[in-house]
Amino acid sequence: MQHSQTQNSAPTIFVIFGITGDLAGRKLLPALLNLYVKKVLPQKFAIVGFSRRNFTREEFRQYIRDNINIKPGQFKEEDVKHFLDHMSYEQGLFDTPESYHRLAEKLQSIDESFKQCSNKLFHLSVPPTLYEGILENLSSSGLTIPCGGDLGWTRVLIEKPFGNDIETAKKLDKRIGDLFSEEQIFRIDHYLAKEALQNVLAFRFANTLFEPLWNRHHVDKVHIKLLEKIDIEDRGEFYDKVGALKDVGQNHVLQMLALVAMESPEEFDAEHIRKERAKVLKHLMPITSKNINDLAVRGQYEGYLHEKGVRPESQTETYFRLETYIENARWKDVPFFLESGKALSESKAEIDIYFKNENEEERQNILTFRIQPDEGIKIRFWVKTPGFGLQVEPKTLKFKYSDFDSLSTLPDAYEKVLFDAFVGDQTLFTSTDEVVHAWKFISPIVELWNHVPMTRYKKGSSYVY
Ligand code: BG6
Image (cartoon, rainbow, N blue to C red):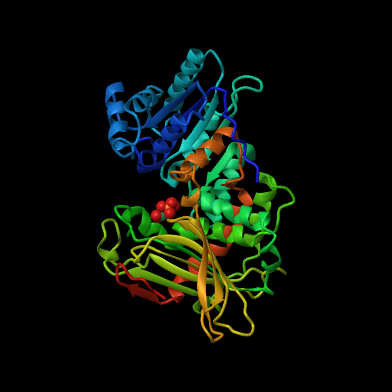
């Protein structure tokens, strides 16, 4: 897999719609600050925050300082100060064309100070209901038109959830497709940018040891988990409308599945990798009213109904487990278990591949990709217990990212996402086809959820199903 590591040197303006929202403070700004400190941002760059609130310049700076999710002492004060010098604010309403004209003037004045037409990245850090309005205003105000010949590309970054079901996703996609070309659209699924998940492909295709075994003849089952200790925190209002399956199943978990199961791409570039990921999602066996009871489990943690923003009778799931099958020659009849939940005993994202052992079923080799925390790879294998007998027992071969000498911490997924958006590499962003196929699989399950009894589980459970 080849990613450009070169600094994107052309002047660039990063516009964040919804700068006062949770995502900007928690993920985007720390990632941008890190990129700035690592000196991979263009020398001439600016961040423009756009939101409804009124701020003076000083109030805005203070607001960012108070809300940027960094630890005291994590960065030199001088770096933070210089980073803030690159930021400015534009007050506006998301649905008012006038606001976009003012934004355009602001961007133009920044271009003038750069003495060059700059690239523009527009990040939609707002609730999905606002996407369409913002995109339309961006397009009609001319803000997304490059300003000079080859210079000054424009790109839009959109967060998940991309639509709410197959219909809304298609409608949104059509709308976006009318306004922008596919090269301009960057649909974020931050799991794709997790270092240890990217390694799944590298590991598969760089090591000839496993590839011959990567199929239905040798793999017994695959278990993909995204378990979280945290509950829904203060996101009740959002979460109750969404539920675990749409929040992380439709995107993060299915993307983990796609990376494990995809065929080797013709080339290791965005176009071919995205095509292969989409093909896996396209071939998922549909879950229907006939099989849903055998293949799906849903759960809700006790106390969920008392969370702020949650409807008292809510049937929203905070846990799911699906048994899925990929209908192609490589994977036919191999179960892929997809599991995710909130308020569980531990937080971990992991992929376990169980290899068949026809003679001794319980004595399987297991290959584990740990996506987080303690990122790494483990192989369970069997060794003879020392002594006179011929018993064997399981042992583990381990690789941990923390063993890399040069590495204090892995780059955050958002750093990678934003860096790739700067350099225009779409590999780690989802394509239209992936989004549509993922919804085609998930939407019918959501519609049939009430066929599946709700399992109640205690907060902190280690086992729901
Ligand atoms: C988000 C979901 O997309 O992913 C959250 O909306 C979830 O509910 C989060 O907690 C998990 O991401 P990470 O990177 O913290 O594992």
